[in-house]
Length: 251
Ligand code: ADP
Ligand code: MG
Image (cartoon, rainbow, N blue to C red; front, side, top):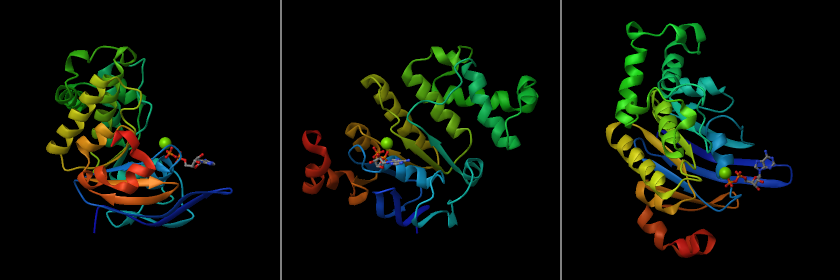
């Protein structure tokens, strides 16, 4: 049994069957990619995995516990963190201040501004934030306003903020969308580094096949709300159904 088990998940929006018969069994410490054309149901599925949407049918279990109907902070407390398509960082705060937020949140359960203002070495939070920035290669930028960072570094910071919550499962929705190739490659390297250094399971939704084939242990291809095929990257690359439904020239 995997760390994340999705059974018979279905979701309908009015007349549209956005998801049907989704079954996933995601192994601990693996990278599982979900790919498929626009409108295939990828984001809907991700929202079901983080409790943001409640499916009409089926179950989603993380470490044997249901995620359905839980609030975002409860999902975080269970050990699940997510990164959305647009980086969610505070542009007016420095890189270091941004990094301290999830560390506070992890400790207190909720972010308190007064605690934040009096943060110092004693609390250990500053030290922890600085260490994380160091491991991300962002230490030199720590007193910069986050708004001034490159798109790639914003993403790097956001992934770091996600890791600061010490999750066992990270969900990423198109983390390289709109990035230049150099930033995409840097993000791939960062995710590879995370995979090597931490006991962590990653579910990644991605358009960019280069990213998927560089990182994934297994790939599920969605088409019109249903899984078309699930296999290793090697098998997916040459799969005739996948070529037909999605990859086209990219394969
Ligand atoms: P993807 O992320 O693969 O591009 P989505 O999961 O966003 O696809 O959408 C799947 C289908 O469900 C699309 O046809 C989309 O228009 C529809 N859809 C998504 N969210 C909603 C919603 N809240 N209400 C109605 N239709 C939706
Ligand atoms: Mg989407």
